[in-house]
Each structure stands twice: as structure tokens, then as C-alpha cells.
Length: 155
Image 1 (cartoon, rainbow, N blue to C red):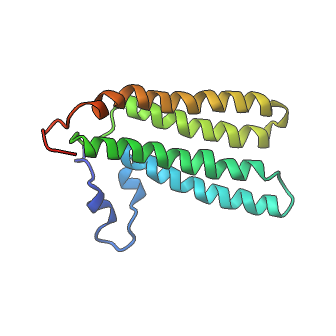
Image 2: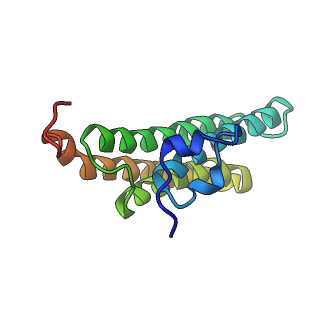
């Protein structure tokens, strides 16, 4: 198994920067790449909406539920771990949070496009997944945020 990829290594040497495929084993990083991918999906859907091919709602939700959701949950876990002096590595609990939020966006965007008759059901399922992802964050990280840092330093 390859050693964990530090953020500085990902941005490093080649000039290309992202090295997305190298982050696939590091959940705390790949969730951020997924968030940025949702921006591209948003732009494609927004273009289709402007051309009148689809409704605007899926594009909006790709940006808000997809990009914002993945980037927010990813940064919340990363900064909480960093500011409480914990390792910058996601565990299975974190991966479950990430998957719930990303799947929430996928359901909210894809189902209304593919099966418009199931839009209301998609909204409900998406809301449940979104809520579950952020509830898991609260459950998992509240104890860390309410206690002193593990290294005893201020912050």
C-alpha cells in the first residue's frame, strides 16, 4: 500500500497540480476532487438548461448539493482533524459521511432528469441522505470539538 499523500505532494512537482488519480486511496482528498467535479457537471447542465434542453433545477442542485455539499463536508472533516491535532486521514465513518452527501446530490440531480415522475421521491431520498451525512459529522466530531486538542496545545 502506498503511503498517504500529503496535500503538498498533490500540488507539487509536475506543474499539473491536482493528480486526482493519486488521491483515490485518500478519502479526505478525493472527496474534494469529487466536489470540484460537480462544478463541471453543473456547467454542463447549466449549458443544457440555457439551450432549453433540460430544466435549470438539476444544474442548480449539481452546484449546491453536489459541489458545495462535497466540499463543505470534506473541508469540515479535514479542518476539524487538523485543528484538534488528529491525523489527516479519513476513516470508514468519514467515508460514510462523504458517500451520503455525494449520493444525495447524485439522486437529486440524476433522478429528475432520468425519471421525472419520481422527482418528489428523489427530493425526499436526497434530503434524507444529505441530513444523514451531516448528522454523522455532528455525531463523529462533536466530542473532538468539545474537548481540548489531543496534543494539549491551544487552538
